[in-house]
Length: 167
Image (cartoon, rainbow, N blue to C red; front, side):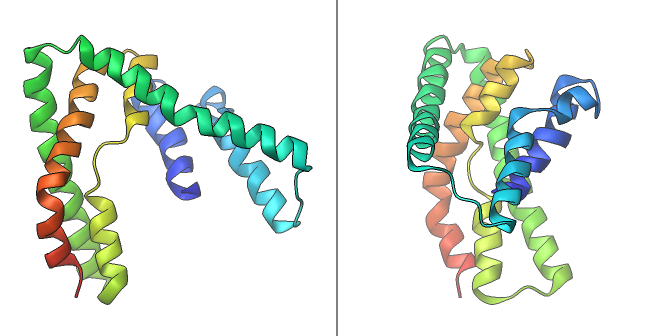
């Protein structure tokens, strides 16, 4: 999760914002929290119970808020956005599987680890991508459609993927 967050909120933001890597992007709260979390783990620092509870409550609110935001966007989804969303969703699942398979082949990864990598790489488009597209005005309607269609496609392809991925 930490590695994914660092990549998404540094390189990912550099791409979606069109700014490239800049100090402004590297000061993103997610990246700062990753650094704080690493320091806390390394030095075995624990938050006081009252602060831990507050942070947990705020963190637990984020997923429902993202889903509500996505729902509002989906209620305004047009057919023209749905077509591109379906194409990109299918491409994302196929390219994710292809890239994971290639990495596993080149690295000689076998067994359960190979299955985990293949399955993780073919998961649907994350809701957070919609929020990034909305924030940087980069086709949020198409990204919302991608989230929906990649989730639906995953329901259809996951049984086959489990047969292929798990020994």
